[in-house]
Image (tube, rainbow, N blue to C red; front, side):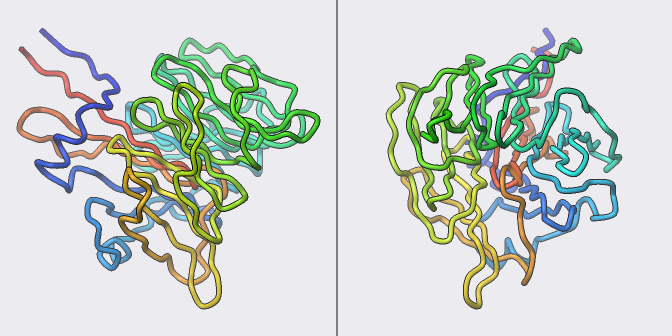
Length: 310
């Protein structure tokens, strides 16, 4: 019997133990309009720094890329702030406009379990635009100031960030005020539907499905991209200070630092969800491949099961 491709958050741990290199590459949207990659399969900072490659040059057609995420076919979707569009980049690096309707000041991006793409429109009067696989387009959860983050859990619940008109910052669940935070920005859904939220106050919050909030990590000067992979590790970008360049930190599931590596002098990630990751082309003997995704300041990890006869 043929087993279709599907999102599977339970496989990566086995794959990583068998072959750590299958953890894939981290894709990072940069302020110069390029997208670079890092090999994040190991935990040696110097090795990760040396693995940096330009995957999509600054001249490829992106302008002010703010959020990035991959679909199940390995196409990269980018919120393009300069012209209020969503760009699609194929695995071969071909750039086209995927969506241009009901988009204003786009930031975070997230795919839901049914294949819908959700776009966070940041700023005053922000909203979430939903693009359905069948071609439907709708604006949902309007009426608040958006922080630019969006995430979707395994049941299809949509999480967004922003403030009400009294400037009280919240995480919204399906358009309803849910958990109080400070100035939230990037968001990423982690294992067991735990939500990770980056704030302007240098904190990364962890919010359980029951709505319990705790401080997962604090790093100064923290920026606003965050990504949780299926192993429970969390990536966060750290701003430049003194003689140090901007860096990326990967935290262990307990919040301790696993590795921190620095980018070249002057290099800057985008603010919202500049990290993402894509399917790895090699297939292991069992017939399964892994997909890692990091969002433009926020990171995301997916996995795919390869069709096979049983």
